[in-house]
Figure 1: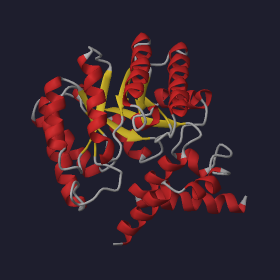
Figure 2: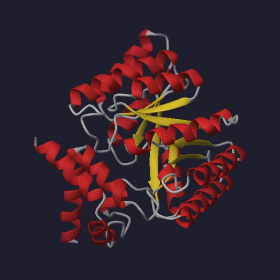
Figure 3: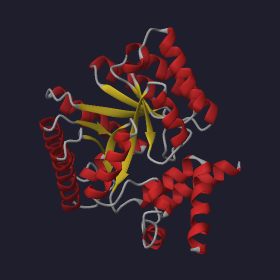
Figure 4: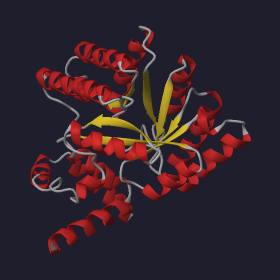
Length: 313
């Protein structure tokens, strides 16, 4: 009950402009600020330093320029230009260019055709640099439009794109089958948005069961699947099922959030599993940060300790 209330609080806080302004004043100040536990930096240069550190430790990465739900076509264009600059700078730095994009940041809620065109620019430039673009999934209200936009680019012949599906939605099993039949790559997540019981599982055990079943399907029938979880039991189940079905360590990967369960990330990498770190950066970090706190009580404890430490400094 307490965990559910905590989750609801932080999800609500993620959408609070007042709280965002208050926390953003100091949350990223200094190399040891509490937000930097989960954010790779505010600029491309800063996040590139984080990328190089991850690569040296045996991890791959996916960059996410933070932002969502823009309210104007110009804001969507600004976000697109930021992604294009990022891909160009990362490519010129000789780093494999992998990015995740939220379509609401590219104006999906304003003009779907503009969003599609701007996503196409990003995908084309990423391909030029040997890169890959993952389309993040957002709240259920954007689910169908997101999948349609993804399918449109796929039908044009773009193959350096993948999509995210959320296990807690009832329709995901059907969506998963559709995407697998296309031959597209899927990142499977449990889901981090507040949804009604009409469309999503509410109990953790039901979400976990759906995730495991879909993960098993992806291991056998999917194309280079990625599993986004920090739950050791889920990870052990996936590893065991892969071994039992002849799927090698190079046939899938785990994707984990920057700053979350670093011990587990290191253990999996040492065991020879592919571990990709989802590395967000940019100035619009507050909503993302709040959702990380909503997902795991241990994250709240870490931040509380950081604030107390800063207060003594």
